[in-house]
Length: 70
Image 1: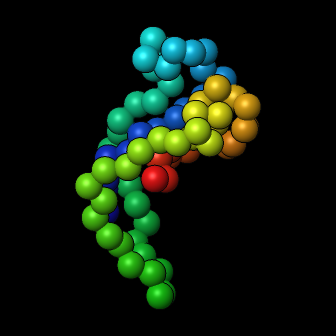
Image 2: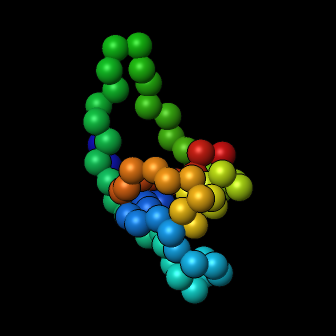
């Protein structure tokens, strides 16, 4: 299954993010759901303060990673 996602490939981007453009919208492959899992269609997601702290490198996370959990 394929979907669109906001992908962060490298953290530590300088602000303003509108200029440094740390995210790219990409088509990604999802693994099929496992036992007791479901796939739901999401119409939209937002970035919160904790996502922004990952973008600027304050909260290091492995990359690439999909952002936007709200």
